[in-house]
Image 1 (cartoon, protein in one colour):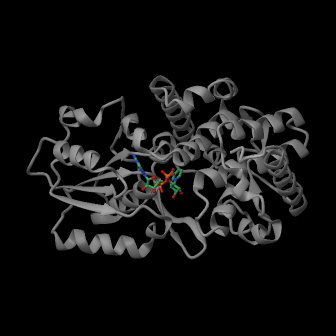
Image 2 (cartoon, helix red, strand yellow):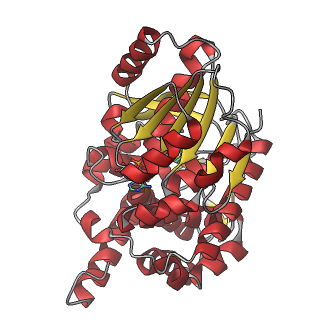
Image 3 (tube, protein in one colour):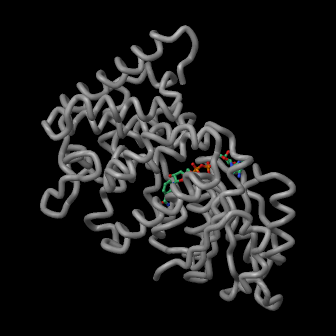
Length: 366
Ligand SMILES: NC(=O)c1ccc[n+]([C@@H]2O[C@H](COP(=O)([O-])OP(=O)(O)OC[C@H]3O[C@@H](n4cnc5c(N)ncnc54)[C@H](O)[C@@H]3O)[C@@H](O)[C@H]2O)c1
């Protein structure tokens, strides 16, 4: 199923005009990130007119089986039936959780997403992946259940903390690295527009990202081959995130993961050293706070890297860039085994780069 995507500034103010929320006899449940502002929640409630509203505290601990059961109990207590529409307004944490809930409640109810973080607008809201975490395993239990409708209003970004904006850029830069050299070059020139939250720039990067992700997902809807390229940076990134017990956000962790995995492409002769340094420099330009990652070590990360879902047996696997803007196919697998030595060298290189930038500046350069 293909999601119907709407994307424009102030879309939320006009949500009622889409004609999708008019039927008062259809029960609607609005799940919203409890960090949204009062005015944003008020507008959502006025336009959607939900039968039930459920605030969700957005944190990885809540992307859990326990939380799913708690929500299912609330819904059943309120007699929400198969015809209920679930509307999830929030970042990727809320949309992943509610997406999974929608996929399983009465074997599947109508799902609408209103992403409110940059990361969710450019990535998590499309493609249909829904998931919860279990034990040490991130996103391991889930379904593919694309939302029926997605409403993207970049206006939500006006209240998003800067660090969350920066983390969202990780997935945007990823699209340039794995799929579109021209987009990567455009991002290299655009950090000023990003700093200013230029509305044209934001709309531009959201729509290009959505186009790229949709293109990839359409070619591999069941996540069996090409779609794995979307995991660039995630073999290492998820380990960093898990090691920090989610204190390091997803975007920051995968930004570091991309630099480290790009080093493996460099070590295999696919990227020049200039290109590798350019990738690191781009993340620094977008002010990724890498200084907080300076103390990470292979010893701590490797056992977690071995738990990665792309692992085929004994060895972890990663996406390998063939150049900026493309990846190696490995006979349609799109990932290759990476050795402990490659990982060690790459992590050491990354922490050294971070140290260099940090020490050169009298104040935090990030
Ligand atoms: N399903 C997918 O394809 C996919 C893709 C990428 C990431 N993800 C998942 O997405 C999650 C990360 O999502 P995220 O980066 O959006 O983080 P998040 O959902 O945790 O949100 C980040 C923070 O921003 C706050 N927030 C959200 N919207 C706000 C707004 N408009 N104003 C002020 N504060 C706001 C939240 O309360 C939270 O504190 C991870 O769990 C990751 O696994 C899923």
